[in-house]
Image (tube, rainbow, N blue to C red; front, top):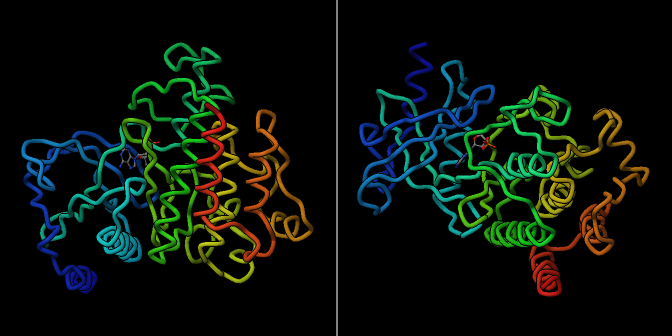
Length: 320
Ligand code: ACK
């Protein structure tokens, strides 16, 4: 135990530019929990040049987390220090000094994850209000009702989300960052319906039971992964583009789980044979063509995120 502790602390050379005193944080509630990680909502006093209190999200580890999870959190910290884009979650500070838990302080996204927002928006149509309805197949047990009620998601909202995410991803690929886990659960929605790409780097946590396939080296989001990542562990911006195609599918289905009924064990073989998800009911042929282009077996044939951003910009213009 002592060795572990010393190990932890030797890795934590506090960065004065970002270090934030724990006693200036008021933890309010838990927003979500994974196997080893936890996201809290807090108020931070005088953070990132803002005087007074700011609502923030705090990423931390659970008591039984291992060294690997600490390393993941710290590598996310290092990556977040380097990035700055309106569609990428912003780092506000961190508490890393000995004598307390490691806190990564990031901007708060009032609507939570895009996946939960999309799923909540369904219930407006179906009048399935959580207070009055017993959990059914269509009601997500993981759902978090702490966020403001979602409004109807329009086709224009979907294009806007796709456009914003491709912009953020275009920026990340420009700075040579590969996300490796792009999915609706890892995009946050902030006020003004601004998408914020989050959970990038090597964070290997889970907030979803079926999304990750357990392997010796953590959990793998098989249904979002490009064939070359599945077979050869190759991760590039082009494999992120594949995942983005799945994300578009999640958007048009308002947060459905991809490849319904397909066991993850069979997926690689099916994809190699050319099998792809069919066009969802309410998806335009143009949008379906875009997602299919992301699922080209040859990574070099897939579009760049900058191409995708231009495409969505044009589609948004056409939709008004
Ligand atoms: O969909 P949610 O309610 O929104 O559930 C997840 C949960 O924590 C675990 O990731 C929420 N969450 C994560 N980061 C933030 C953030 N920066 N602002 C607001 N909610 C967040 C997410």
